[in-house]
Image (cartoon, rainbow, N blue to C red):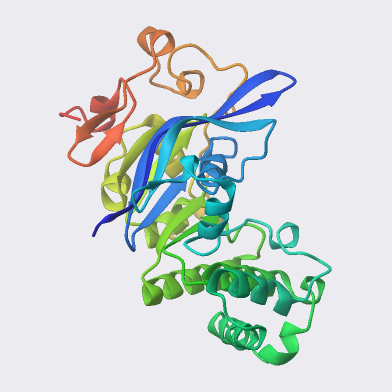
Length: 336
């Protein structure tokens, strides 16, 4: 499996009233061909900004990419002209956004929103594009495509709109899809259907997937590799099995402890209920980060060393990286 995307030392800033916010801080990672990589963390950790930076959708002048490289098939996307980037965006790299109603144009029909990209990127006729659009709707489970192509986003349910977004992302058979919390706005039943659809189509088409989520249950079922972000930085990265078996950063431990669990019923129903674990505090404001490790104010293991110096991001075990002074303790007292 070759490397499809390489993100090297990506740094993205936003100018706010409170000062300059470094939303993605010297972030590096890669994605292999056909691989599923999950970016996880709480809101405000830099996951979505990293994805928008790859697509070069960070809006100036407030937002700007100030450092790093994004190599896609060996080409630095950050060095391309706007026109060259438009040829890649949608054709070779596509994005499924979190809330489809803010991404779909309310005054254009579903058919037009699907055919426009096909005509631009594939150079096919309007008739061929409409035929392909109907095939795409059928592929994502939307029946009666001819009638649906003439409808507008408000005539679709939330789940149908998200299926429409998946169809748009897959329209030109891209090599890479960025899925930003693709199921968050949906009810639980529809969430499972949409996620299953994305993964089935990914396997069928051989597309690489970057899945941005805060749901570790989804990660366990879908990803090959996991990247944990906190306050704009990577704090841990490993294969999904290694991360779930023995996480080496307290933040990852906290995320896993907060997964709801249903214990076995042995007595009264009330005995089966357990208090949901939580990580104390909140993600710090990026305009006022604490000295040392940014997670230290919320960490039970933090000491003076943690509060004074940010830990290096190191390979603690083969293929397992973390930025923590206490990884050996988290690993059970042995070598981290």
